[in-house]
Image 1 (tube, each protein chain N blue to C red):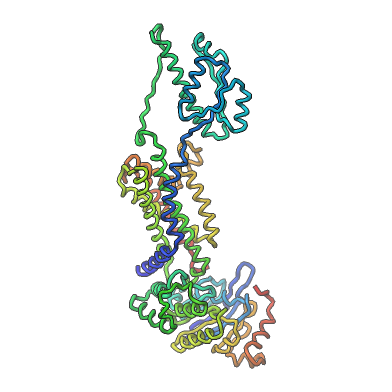
Image 2: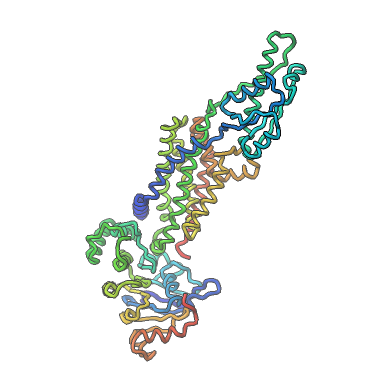
Length: 245
Length: 372
């Protein structure tokens, strides 16, 4: 069964159609790249799949649950890392992990072993008791990702996780994504970096709320006769009629 | 339960790491309770009086002496020109003009009656009213003295006089502070509760952490309870500080049971916090939440019976106070502190405020949307 199955999903804000009748499937354990220019509707689509926004029309299942009727069940099985930084800056690293772990129903024992494992993995053991606001951006992003994975979700949604992050940290971030996918987690990621698009198993490209291309990076390059993903993206993005907003 | 515990842990950590909140908790009760009752009261002193005396007799001078002997009046000028007195009023140098007509003494003696004329500067209505009342009392006193002076021998039947002797219950000396302090305590608890809770959820919206919460399987009531309880505790802490200050500084110890106050305050805080959280869920920014709650609190407090008596408000305003939680608490506070009322005496207040708490919190839970 697919991790995510979307049929004719639409979201309208008044007369504006942010997401226009999109359909796609994401397989289990896949790294699915969700590309598109600013304002193409990526974040809106992702927020619908996470149960943060009601779809206007269409059907979808996430982790086998219906998006309309079982949104709260979906929430137990997914992790989400939003574009905005979403850890509490006035709490320490350890307290943030404890808070989100606790909300997902982890026991004190589980939280403790998770915390130790994550801190060690991220090389943040020394900083366990520092406030999050004093961490540099790259570390914050890696920490956010780990926190989004604290309850070992089936699917993790990442909304531009590497925006503004330096190339070295981006590499490390993608290593973490690969590790998660290896462990069986489905990764749904949006990005503006075309080199990152090459790392994905499959990629979809949104233009003006529609999905105009979908396939493996190799297939897409062939289909649009481009040498790299940047070429594919430029060809598609030029069709866009919507302004950059 | 465990989720709630985790939420509370987090909220309390954030509160105690926020120096602004801590400062409010300790400074606000101190400042409001120490300064307001001492500085802002209704007692009118230093009423500036100008006397226009056309008579210049022994009696008129005696009257003026009697008036200026009290601490309430300050004689600006003693003149014989009404126009001059009016100039003082126009320049805001006098609040009251007392005019003693010519032949005042003669009329008093010969005709047994005389007329005085009083002009008030009513720009400050309270001052004008109270000033004229004081003045009337002093003149009345003067009148009685004059009569007794003449009536040493009962030459004829004295006019029957009805003497009224008032007794002030619950606040024997009509001490303004005893009346005011319990009310200010209510304002304190209300302001802190309403503002802190109104700002809280909306802050998470602004920072963006609410998204992360909304994507978890947390229940709405858990989230709201997690926000409610910390501020409930803070509100009771403030009440405690306030009660301590009013005992230590003003010697006001509640006549009734202190647990009656805490019990009512506990229920009352639920209502106020519910309102704050409701504001928080419908606002998008902290600014908006602040203005909205400021607007509501202003009305609640002004129409709450702290500064002005509810009984003398117009009917529509009195109807409004029926849905004003602040009015109930001020009433209860005065009842328990000054009169020693018991839980049984305040049962209707208690039930009504409990009703507000249920309605407001249900609305807060209802209007908090995990999904938009």
